[in-house]
Structures are given as C-alpha cells and as structure tokens.
Length: 529
Image (cartoon, rainbow, N blue to C red):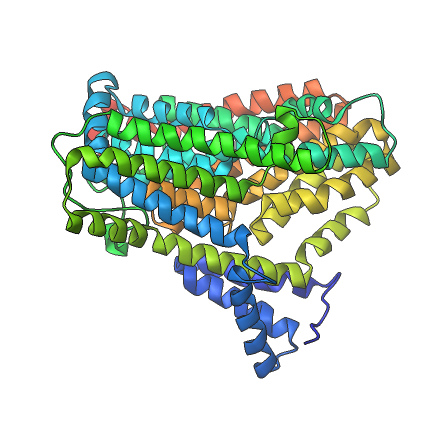
C-alpha cells in the first residue's frame, strides 16, 4: 500500500494537533488518541476507507509483531504488568502500610514527603521509565498519608525523571545522547573535545532541565501550588487524593493488607528491582560491546545497552524476589491469584494509552511531522546568536507534537550540528544543548508522551489531570530558559545567559509563592471559603 507523502506540508501537523487539542479539551485520552490516529491514517491513505482500515490494522499489529516479536514495545508492557503485580504483592504483604508508618514517624510534613519523593527521583537516575514507575510506587504511600494529591506526586515524578536522566552521563538517556554527539563531532571534524566532555560541558547550557529540577525542589520544599494544582491540593487536604468522579486511576489497587508487614517488605523488593535492572543494563551493554569487539567500560555499556530487555530481566528478578519473600506471610492460593489478577488489571489503563500513543507516534512519523518542523529551522536565515532560542522552541514543538524526546534528539541534534557548523562553529554546544532542553520541555507538556503516561501511572493519577496540572510549571520554566537563551544570543556568553535565567527563576519563585498564598497557615481558612 502506497502512502501519501506530506513532507514539508503543514498537513503533517494535523494528526498530532487533533490528538493534543482533543485530549486537553475533552480530557478523554483514548478517544483523543484514536481521533489523531484516524485523522493521520486518512491523510496517509488519501481518504480511501479500505486502505485506511488496512493501515490501522497493520499499525496496531506492529506494536506486537513486526518481522517477529516486537520486543521494544511488548517488553515495556510486560514490565508494566510485572510492576503492577509487585506493587500489589507489596500492598498485600503490608509493606506499603509499614513504610507509611515508618515514614510518618520521621517525615512530619507535607513538604518532607514531597522532598523525599524528589530525592528518590535523583537517586533512581538510570532510566526515566524505571524512575517514573519505581519512585511512584515507593513515594505514593507517604504522600497519600500526608494528603498530597496524586496530581502533585505525578508532577514531582515527571519533572525529576527526564531532567535528571538528560544531564546524567551514566543513564540510558546520557548514553544515547553521547553517542549522537560523538557522531556529530566526527561529521564536522571537531577533535579538540570528546563526546562525553561535550555532554558534561553542555549541562549548564541545558537551561530547561537545570531549572526544571530547581523548580521541583522549590515546589516540594515550599509546597508551591499554582493553577489547577491548587484545586487538586485543596481536595487532597480534604481527603480526596484524586478526582473520584473519573473513576479509579491506573496503578491503584484496593486489597486487604497484612498487619504483620514490615518496611523490608517494601524496601527489599524495590531494591532488588533497582539492583537487578542496573546489573541488566550493564550486562546487556557489555554483551553488545563484546560482540562488537570493543573493550568494556561502564559508560560504553550504558551507551550500548538494551533498555527494554534490561527492564524485563530486572522485573523478573524483582517479581521472583517479591514472590519468595511473600511466602513468609503464608498466603492462600486465592490471595495469590487475586493479587496477580488485580496487579495486572491496575496497569491496563496505562497499557491501553501506551499502545494508542505508539500507534499515533508511528502515524506521525509517516506524516514526517518532525522533518517538517526541523526543515523550518534549517531553512531559516537568522543571526547565529539566536539559534539556541529558535532551536529550543522548535525542539519543544516537535517533542510536544510527536510525544517523543528521543525521536526529537535523533532528528534535531544532527540538524542543529549542521546549522552550527554553517553559521558559527563556536555555537555548536549551546545549540545542541538547546535541542536537549526543548525536547524535554515538549515531552513534559505532551499528553501523548510515554514518559508522561508512565508518570501518571506511577503516581496513580488520572492522566489528563497530570498533564493539565504540570503545564503551568513546565511553561514557566520554559520561559526562564527562553530568557537565558535570548540573553545568551545577545551577549554571546553562556555564563551570562545562565545568570539571566537564574534571575528570572528567582522572580518566578517569588511569584509562585505569592500565588500559593493559600498554602500558608494564616490564609488556609480564607481559602476554604
């Protein structure tokens, strides 16, 4: 079946636009994703109904089978199901309850519970998928106990996971980016700096990631709640952790838990999951290095690792360990079966959304939406000093429209390298850093981003509630980054640009504190009315 090409056409934006606008307006994610998929499929098949049905069937089939088992997606879904079962078993064992009791004696405030969640996000930096799900399942019992809304928890998870991964060399993100940077440096014959040195040098130039992390720390420490987040936080303080009118969010499990559970019933399974996944990431990477005849190094292993395989291996070890530990509670067969069934069911809403999002991303790829947006930048004739700002905005739009920061990296980093080489080679690192910053920003705002979906799942929050409540924070930090990139272009100084963003960030925090006045004790009573 021949597909219509929409290369360099504004029509390539139609499918993601339909999905994103409908998701925000209707707050029905599956309906919105479906509308985007159908819109793109009709465009690609020139509105031929039979060809459209054939294309749709092929698109959904390829999520699971494409010249063999599609491990890239199937293993992610398996990992989600395993994590759901592990979470349910931990709950049944009383581990979550025991951890809540332990933390309650040590963490005495809402801010403390939020800061602990952020700290966990910094510690679990190896991969954003794993970060979102693991931190959510560890932090949720504590934040629930202190009346922190699930929407706030989802924000703390999402705004820690990707920003930490994108500035950490020893992570799946860092390895992928370093590999791309290395190819760009070779292509432009830049030999005075290595790929990893370039990556590290770019960290303070990645203004969105740096200040997104600063924002999430300040938000947790000061309990800053602005925009729709204020509504969710007021409800949470009254005992409604999520909007119950929308049903039970993904990841929530309601089962009786043992009164004999201990903190170890939560910590040890999660620790086994973290250790097993980390070892698997290094092992699969080392195997790839060995096959290529290359010497082993930890960074090289992360650069060549198979993330989805490693997640499944880690998940299997974590599930086995959790199951063995559960034997001490002497559960009957019915409880075991119920835990497995309920744990799997708890992840089904997230699985449905992920499958639809993957199909839409494939449709968007066929429409060449990313290439169209990238072409707009490449064809522009502007002052090189303003390229970091322009590239940041376009990368953000691309990640928002396509729902993938990694896809944006793959498309935009080589283009940004070409632009820098043609305009001013000295601008290479700032321009590349602005791609990373813009991609993470767009990913944070996009309702079709898999990382955003998994953050909602980890927090057990309704997906669109997470998207809408995170937007004010993400957009505000993006404005801080824009100020920095603008000043960077005017002054031709990365340090001055960072300083300008710092000043803008301080002003933003002061504004947020004023807008969050209802969190202060003296104003609480007024806010209730």
